[in-house]
Amino acid sequence: MKEIRLASRPSGWPTAENFAIVDVETPVPGDGQVLIRNVYMSVDPYMRGRMNDVKSYVPPFVLGAPLDGAAIGEVVASNSSAVPVGAVVAHGLGWREFAVADGNRVRVVDPAAAPTLSAYLGLLGMTGLTAYVGLLDIAQFKEGDTVFVSGAAGAVGSVVGQIAKLRGAKRVIGSAGSAEKARHLVDDLGFDTAFNYKEAPVRDQLRAAAPDGIDVYFDNVGGDHLEAAISQLNKFGRVAMCGAIAQYNDTSAPSAPRNLALAIGKELNLRGFIVGNHNHRMPDFLAEVGGWLREGRISARETVVEGIENAPEAFLGVLRGDNTGKMVVKVAER
Ligand code: NDP
Image (cartoon, rainbow, N blue to C red; front, side, top):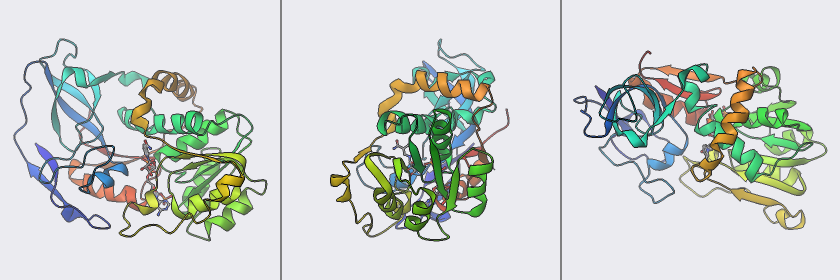
């Protein structure tokens, strides 16, 4: 079987040379363990941070060892009484065709409750929960708010905008990296307006899109997006600081936001969060977002890259913006 290892640590933008695709023996499950054939694996921006040898909220990837991350697969051999052969499980051992995991470290999911298994990595998985918790709990969204979300055509951002609309936002504004993505936000996902941040300064485009200001900013990007949002936020505005993808590959400190002191007079609340510390919201999230999905009121667009050997390229693609919706890698048929 194939697995993908970290061959070297990048400085700045990663390249294919930082990864090694290696053929290894398929592992054998021990007592209480299961053998999983991975069907989909996730590639996520936070993995860029794990390629660096720095202490963070998740440990760095180990040089020469397989990478890991969210995956969904089918149990093909089991020594666990809790998880039978044939069960579909979500777990944390992606970047390999087969994985051995303790039966009590996997989560059995219902394949019939999702349009495709990959939804458990996106809309019904970690990125969907990030959108839900970030908007509702961290930014304290309330009906009638005007919401701005960056990275709006990506996995988290596209769900933020849709939840805001479904929960009664006055106006939802998105920014994304192409005219096609901006069109998708308005035409397919129900955003009120969207702009291509590469076309003109974010500050100018946001001001034009939100002449009456914004109440909530969901930040996936940092930098000039955060600076523009701080300028445009209304009194008592709230920011969910979710990500800062504009600076993940930077080798020097970012220059924006330069206007943070505006937060004092406007009495803004800027709050960061890590979704892994909010798993207690999973039942509420699955009930509400799963319900919208069944009713066809929320959309789960994905970009699917075929073949585990293309996982490094899929990951680089997420950093570049090749994806619309959640980027996943299809490892095997099911
Ligand atoms: P996405 O699906 O949004 O993919 C990343 C997107 O970022 C790309 O598609 C690209 O879209 C955009 N992007 C890349 N470079 C830039 C840039 N310089 N400026 C603006 N946009 C850029 O990924 P996710 O939805 O998985 O993650 C979104 C954000 O949320 C990330 O910052 C991630 O780290 C964060 N996150 C945080 C979590 C938490 O617990 N706090 C949990 C999960 C994610 P485009 O074409 O529009 O540029």
